Length: 193
Image (tube, rainbow, N blue to C red; front, side, top):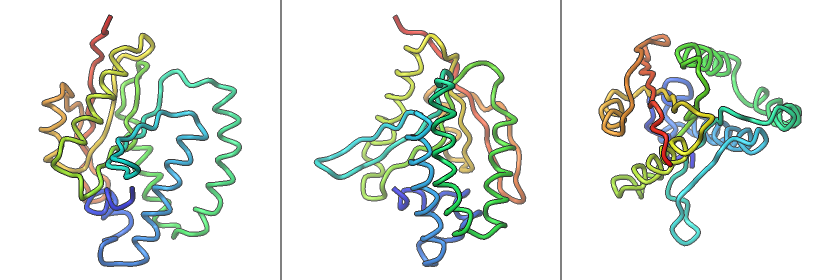
């Protein structure tokens, strides 16, 4: 899945150009792998679309009603995955990722909601409706969940803002990390019966 993020503005800002720089590619692969491991350990939702056994795209989303005991157990196991990542990446990179997370989470609504951590489509499948199918699945899930009042996300790509607005997301804040623009958005749940 790391190739799905090679042109992502955040990944370019934090890791460098993974299409041109082997070290940046190693960092991106390690980070994406860590994010998926984290999601499984913390019982976050990971959902993907496959064609035969080829992963076309996937998303990772935090649920608003995580089981506390599972989260604690997963958090302890996560330390075992986090330590190697800390030794593989420069301190500056880890600092940027941490700053980004703190900043974007500060703009998320205080009400119970899902948080779209990442959504990506493999380059060979882009423009074929995979991203739309992923997003529709997520919104359907959120709209059926009585414990969620919507889904928050952030994007650094200005073009994505218009696309997300077509799905019902509202731009609730624009901010920056260094020279990187960040657009924080929220989709209010529409409870389905």
